[in-house]
Image (cartoon, rainbow, N blue to C red; front, side, top):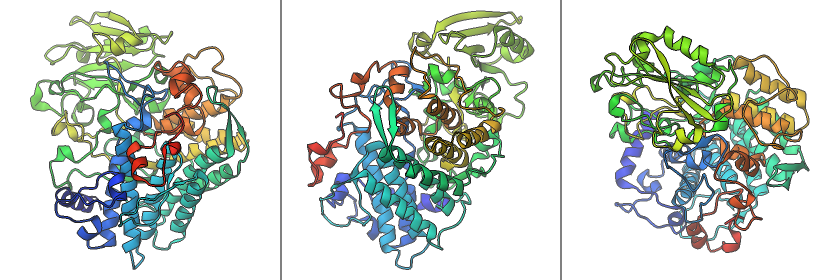
Length: 611
């Protein structure tokens, strides 16, 4: 299926341009050849279905709408974002594009269902695609127009649909897909949706519906709430079980996210497909950029390092999320950057040597990153044991070691080894200075979860040169969905069982919610008994799902978005900073003004609160 998607996509680049939601509402045809998608494909359901899958790519590969403005990521080196400081508006271009991309994908899924006269596998699969897009719309925008019909006319009347109705439509769609005998039972890694994927998405949808429809705020800034109806949580737990939440996680976290193995992980329930070999155009332009989005800046890629845009560094809180012994830490972050010997060996030297070098035991080390719990003595002992790799010698770059956040959660400590093996502390910087100061580069590890080990051989600077499949649904996520649903049902022991399933795989013995204690620093009054359970669940989701484009939706769903931003986002000091007038918090993204203008049934009164 991968190669098929790219062949169709390449043909469409030159013959068909899908523009904004406004354009398809007005049925404008912008293509050079005057063709609509169904004309180009001659109404072939298979081609339309494959193309609908490809339209998921711009939806799932962006990070700003999913990660900025949370507790886990901070921009560095003067970078900023309207998403991080909550100054986005209905005119924000990324919001317009995101919204229209979602509806373009929905409309293509609807077109496939419309033309699938023989009711092939693509009818239930497109129900899944449509449901996924509406799920994202509900989490990001709340109420939106719902349409399950293919739009091929100039109608511009699409009223907002209440959240309760949208959730009901999504659930019915997914149930219909599951009952269809043309739908595959399990995911086989080929990019086609399956019944298992539908059960997983149902679990996430019902969990969100439980919070949105059955839980009300007591205090937005404090993140306190009242559960009025837990029926959707019961459904979420049931569907999570059907998606495999009760199965013990047996695949190691390292294998699950290994650059050469992740696309075939046994835990994957659905992923958006990429294939370098099958892409017919310039390879550097056909992938995505997730591997370039999480980390500091590491200098010129010509010196052997990976390009990272500095926009999402690990936050002070996130530095202390992983306890000593957590197997997920080393498999989430690249803690060893290898050195280079000139640009001729790009790929086997430098950053990507981690994956491609024949002998990393003798490879020079450029940077070594130690977490907060490693002592000064342990760092010095490690450097001494690795002296041949930690001295510059003939390598291109001066090696350094860093301790990320000392015991006070305030300092970044830099160690340097002289050629004779003498170790010295070269500098001690505050976190803020290391992040933003004049020497603000390479002080923090980058995420390696999305690394494509082959991208270094082509062009390390290109930001669309990552061909790892983007995993959207996987088993441990659903185990944590089950934990959250059980917790909201008051089934504390069962919730702890699910949490321990994930933690056991990470190397920890069983624990309880009451015994959990985070290592990061918080202000007085932030931690309390009311939030203890949900904070534990959110911390576990952060450790397990770091860099997986879930965090903003997790905080919004659990009604902790404002509370966490006030505590952990340096740009936000109060509810006022996340609202239009101090009263209406920005709990959703704004509906693009262009969409309101183009839709005859919408007015300014339909804009989300806060804008």
